[in-house]
Length: 538
Image (spheres, rainbow, N blue to C red):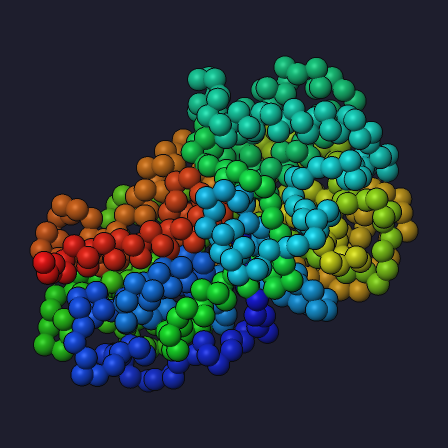
């Protein structure tokens, strides 16, 4: 995912992102509207964009560049960026609580944008793999609970085998017998037939690999992810992970914000409901009404909804009037949306060796062991007592020589969010001491993300559960309303409600470039619509 250059304090937003907090029930004009001007159909159209993440900002920016004059972006949080959240809690250098990387270079519009704007990281080495879950190098220290450091050769053997298995899934090279299996089930079956399963530490390292893969999939467990559906995801070539420069991911989002006219972006404007398919009345001729929680109401010809899938899962039923079609409601229910959190520990002094890029924790009975997972499904809430076992390890952080970053996913991450930061820090230090035997001091600061608790997000990104036709559901989620031939809407104005966001892309879900591209996709849908309707003069 991408970054922005400006950093805002928590709950704050620069003045340029606020419009007047009018108490008027219905706003009949958008900030960009000018009086006494003749407009072409597309420049007269009013478009509301719900959400100022990368998809919402790319949609709005694309429309503005195409000549649309009346664009209003409504962001529920006090800052633009969405799941991009660049902070500076430990000094002048950035810490990313949300998106960390640009995934691939070739045909990646975000990479090209960052390159054009001079936002890419210039230095190489450890900085380019900062906080990279699942990225194993000879500089990673793997420890068993017995404080024994594992041989690099054995760890690399198991990790390489694991990588080969997941590659087969992502490249759609699975045998037919695996088509209905979970990713965890497929991996277990293949590993059991490998000589590596007989190694003393092989099964334990393999469990660590599965735990780490949960971070990539944003899932509570790989037993809840489809093996066969991963083949629809497309990884772009040309360097999979590329850290951004000193401006962080926020710098990328800011370049999109800068394309918008003054007043086009309003923060702290949670949308309460979207009423579409409205009949023309004396006081309005627009088919869509967007009502904010604060009472503001925006009439529009089109609304582009870019909120996260997690938010839709919790709010879609009450948010739309008329209700969403069954195909779209089913897609929201069937696609998975998981939580990935980071735990940053800042120490006064570095206590780990200088050749150590990460401290990885290998449990005797980790949560991604099939037997442990199955038991946890039937034992009620007892797993909460062992939530910390889902942490893969602690990695070094670029430009922060005394900071470590831990990763945790799924229900354990959501439980961690309910705990005090001091308690989380104490648990992490206790694990580091227990596994390594080193003298680990108390952290000077503890900082953790809380994406599952964020009420306007409710998670991190999308994954395909077993038994789900992911392409069908992504496509259904992306379909604009009213649907073609939908009963009762044959005479309705087209493209009233459009949908964007990473969850609406069948091949680039989970990524920032997927989010960015879907915003452009929906903007282009409107541009094409008005291009087809405008008169041609020969």
